[in-house]
Image 1 (cartoon, one colour):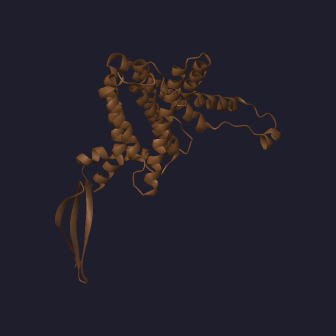
Image 2 (tube, helix red, strand yellow):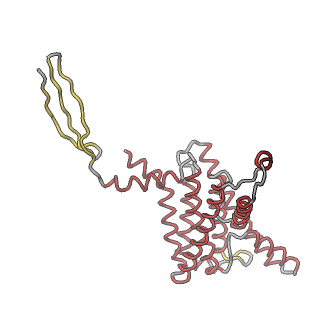
Image 3 (cartoon, rainbow, N blue to C red):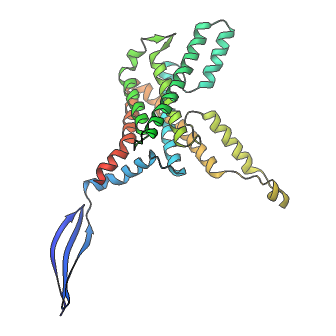
Length: 293
């Protein structure tokens, strides 16, 4: 004789679960059957949180590097273009800063030359800060090694948006503290994506990106004419690298348009959405852990 009976229905982690028993002459066996998964409030956030947490995960893939690079390139473009309207300087253009310092020094403008060099130092200090924080996190086995840098950048952008106007009233060697802050943030961010991607991606170095794009296009249109060419001197483009750098340049330009528009119409406060986005990005791994539990 064989009988079965459903003994209990329960909701577990948003799923409808039936506990049932099966009885025969040799004994009774019980089992649990998951009948249906019902969506919960947490489920609606799981997918985007999982995606965002992968972007800053220590486990890197070419895909996550590309997506994080595109995101940060957009932020860098917005700060660079919008920052020019705010302070009259392109704060990520270190090549230009160094050239300006050389020109001013030759022309006898010692103070402007020192000012340009000071902005260079601010950028380098931001990059050094990233290296210190990431190295400390790795050495001490912290779970989220990139979160402190992203949070620091977000906090600095909040300060820039809230008190940027007041910071302009104070200067170091004729360089406003607002400009110093932007240079520092640019160095901070560029070093972060450089370390994350193992120097494959740089979000503020558009000159290098355009150079690499030109190189890959040259390889793409090159004609390997003979079998000997294919065997010994094959020239082929790196399609992933070409696509990546094109996306970074487009993202930087798009961010520049958004940043310039925001600064033109809203002023310093337009950096607040950027800061909020960075906070969400930095806290995503923590949120994922909480949702899983």
